[in-house]
Image (cartoon, rainbow, N blue to C red; front, side, top):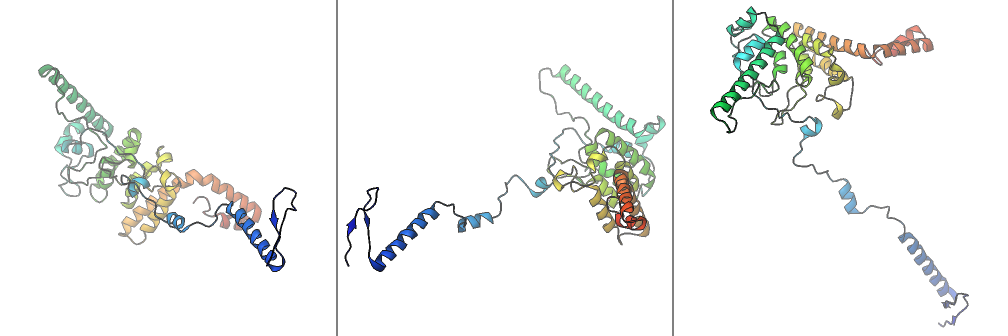
Length: 335
């Protein structure tokens, strides 16, 4: 087979002309090479096997993070100070510090002075804090007098109400706020009003402590106070907390999980969980008290969104009629 070279292009490039079927085959090959060059410049739309394995691989988690910390982003509480003593425990709650004496024990003798002076709960707590300040000032003056220029001695700091009680037969994650729920739960019924007064004081002075939004230095966190009060059927504490001004922040109607101030706490979820929990648990009196807690939470929901519910009801009544409007708008926004 023969072929000849000819320079027929105007640009001066020499091209070879192939006769017959060979020329057609060579043309097809040249066309395929052009397509290969064109497609080689396009981005690769098919991921490689390595990229597929990487996209479905589990995301590595840093070692210093845990599920609890990521779920509830609350900083650790590293405050100093000391826990309350047994005598201070008795003065605040007016019950024996060792927990003995039956369901309704007499008021301890350590509270006699407070009773004689008719001190309220706020005044008792203020007197404990003032006594601590005097003790620290006295210890500092003694150190400067006897040991001038030396480091400060190991003197216990001022009382910190955020520290867990822990030393009086209670749990290591129970603060004064959670203890208010247990006192008056089954025993110490006559002290319920005093626990409500203490809760109101904590809500005014330290709402993070009152609602349970804190984390101890060991990484553990206490129970959310209002949730604990609902499950323990303490409707008096639930009402005191739900209608306090701080509830607008600490008890949102609904919020994404990581945007809730207290772990898992929102009003809609708390009502649903408590209603489900109260189905067949405990005796009749216990369930009745939990129903009162649900009623308190529903009243709070109506207070926040009742106007929106009534507006929706009026709109639907104008559109579809009185009866159908009431039926269609029932519990769409509020109870």
